[in-house]
Amino acid sequence: MAGSDNSIIRYVLQLVTMFALTKLKGISCFGPRAQWGLLSLRGFIGQLSVMALHFSLTLIAPSDTIAITNSSLIVASVLAWLFLKEKLTIAHIVAVFLTITGVVLISQPTFIFGEKS
Image 1 (cartoon, rainbow, N blue to C red):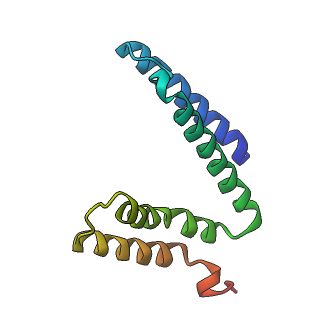
Image 2 (image 1 turned 180 degrees about the horizontal axis):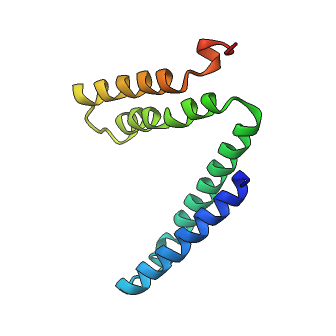
């Protein structure tokens, strides 16, 4: 099954599930009207992210794509520390280091380890 077909099935199932849950709980599916702009922007950026992920899988090695994608947690931690003034503890620093190490060792990106023979 092609990646785009897989994504369509995944997101349609998510849509149906979330629609049913919001109706079951009596919550608006679209959120508060005052936040529609931000929610739309979030949806648009999320879709761009998914498209970029699938596009990157066709251009570079999958291990490189996974390494870059999983590194987003590190970026989020640093941005939260910089802009949201979240406390960066030793545990966070160790977790970031372990994340980087795990991503690199498991995915073995070609830009670090070279091409496999």
